[in-house]
Structure formats: C-alpha cells, structure tokens
Image 1 (cartoon, one colour):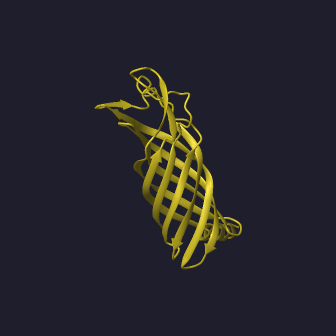
Image 2: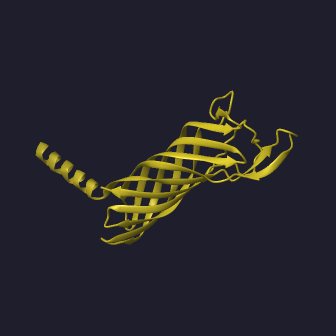
Length: 205
C-alpha cells in the first residue's frame, strides 16, 4: 500500500511540474493618477488638473499553471512603484501587488509563444512620500497624507515568449479604488486612481 501511495504521489508531482512553470519578472512602470480636482491654496477654489506620468519599476515572480486547451492561470507577486506628478509636486507609492491572470495562448510554438491575459490584482502599500516645495510628507501617516493602503483593480496585457524561456510583455494596471489624500487633492475627484503601464522582461524556468 505504501509503495502504491508513493507511486501515485510521484505521478501527481510529475504531472504538476510538467504543467507549471516559474518565471522571474522585472521592468519599468509608467504611472499617472488620471484627472483630479485640486484645491488652490491661494483662493481655496477647486480646479481640474491632469496628473503627469511618473516612471517607477517593478520586480517579482509569476507561476504559470496550464489549464484546459490554450488557457493557463498565472498568479504573481510583485514589488511595484506607483505615483504621479502634479505641477511641481511629486508623489511615490510602494506596493506589494498580487495579480491573478487568466492567460490565453494565441500562439504556442517551441520557438515563439504569444499570449494575452487579464485578471484581478490586489495591492498593499508599504509606504509613500509626497514632495512639495522642499517638504516631504508621509502619504500614509494619518496626520499627514492619510491615503488608503489597499488597492485593487484589473490587470491586462500581452506577452511574447522566445524558446519557452525569454519573456517580454506589456501590462496595464487599472485601479478600481481612489487614492484619497489630504495634501491638496480633494476627495470629490473625477479620476483619482492609479493607472500604470508596465513594460516587463523576464526569464522562465
């Protein structure tokens, strides 16, 4: 009986490893916060302003699990930088992010593979700073920025894999939560949420 259980366990382990693959990922983020309503210090009036793009980076790992046919499930774990620029102000957010994407393999050859993917992500902020007029504020300290630490939304993208090993892709993170702050951006905003284009390269094992 023990021998039979051992054989079954080895068969299950072999099947699992043959349909799963670990990958390391890293690259650049191009971040913005969309449009926001900004309270002017001089008059107290509120005006609409578009935030400028800000460059950050991401680094992490994914685990590809083949499903039925051309579909696969790919959870991931990343350290990722988000943020924005607004006039002369600069904001940085550091997150731990966990996406869970469903992949559709459009092309799956030994030399080249192409996939598109979409799925939810959840993120927890480790910290963040707002720099303005020579001063630095803690975005997550209640008495200073009081921003929300939890973020979630949708991630979608497309990727190319060469010889089953070398990966390159583009993702778009669309947050469904608002980054409320007490640093001049009012909470009755139009689109105060993270929007991130991610250019990624990696290696599969």
